[in-house]
Length: 99
Image (cartoon, rainbow, N blue to C red; front, side, top):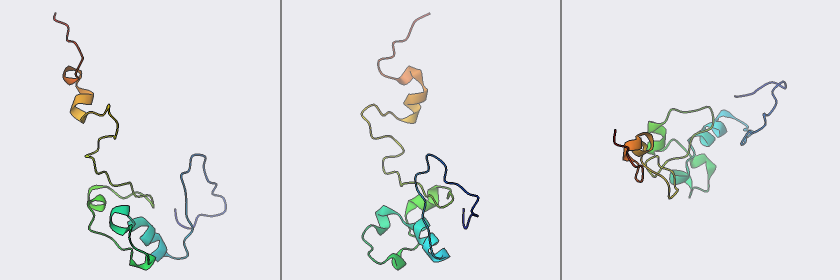
C-alpha cells in the first residue's frame, strides 16, 4: 500500500513496514535479496537480479518471499517430501491392515 491516508492503522501481527522518500527506494526494497545483494554497500546498486526467486514466485505487494534453497522442504529432522506427507501408505512405520 503506497501513501495510505491517516485512517490506516497498523494491524496486530504486522511484521514490519518502511517509509521511503521516493519510488526508487521502494523498488530497491522490493528487489533486494540476500543471495544477490548481501555484499552491496551502496543501496543505489540494488537492482532486479537474475535470481530465480523473482521468476518462480508471483510478487506480493512490497513483501517478497525468501528464496527457498531446500526444494521447499522444512529444515527439520521430521521433514518428508510432499508425496510422503500426503500418502499414508508411503510413510515409514505406518503398518497396513490386511482386510
